[in-house]
Amino acid sequence: MRAKKSTLLAVAFAAGLSLTACQSDDTASTGAGGSAAAPVGDSGTTTPDPGTETSAPATSTSPESGANADSGVGTCSADQLALSQNHGMGEGDILVHLKNTGDVSCRLKGFPGVDLKGADGTVSADRSDLAAPLVTVAPGDEARFTLHYTPNLSGGSGVTYTTMVVTPPNETHFLSVPVTVNVAATDSPGATVSVDPVGTGK
Image (tube, rainbow, N blue to C red; front, side, top):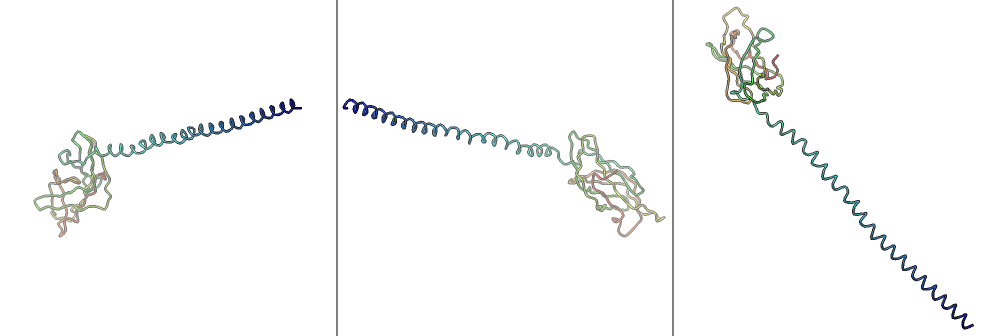
């Protein structure tokens, strides 16, 4: 009986040790799994960063490059323009040409100042109601505008102008070219002469 009791106690004691060892092993694996999950989470949060940094410059540099390209074209100055004229589409129209004689492109926008001069005096052209486009003039090319006047049909001598003085838009210097413009003598000669903006001449 004592031998059996000793054997049973030994078996029970061994079983208890085995159960304790199993519980210790299970706790260690859970701890290892929790600590291993942390690097996976870290790599997941760092992945979007490179994409954000590379996409931002691509969208912000496009407008700047376009603006820089446009900023290289300046306003046409009088010293890089040649002035000429010929009769326009109808009687009382003069087509005026501004040719770029420089080495680089330039821009014109707005109304030119136009004065007609002669022995009978000087008259300044009024502006028409047309909108002024932005015109880029390459070297060797030209921009045009039209000067309108009311021809003298009165039968009298009228008023004759022999020189046209043109100040390009956004300029203070002028150019001149010979013309022959005869209008009826009136108390308001300016009302008989008008000018369109540069870029609207046909």
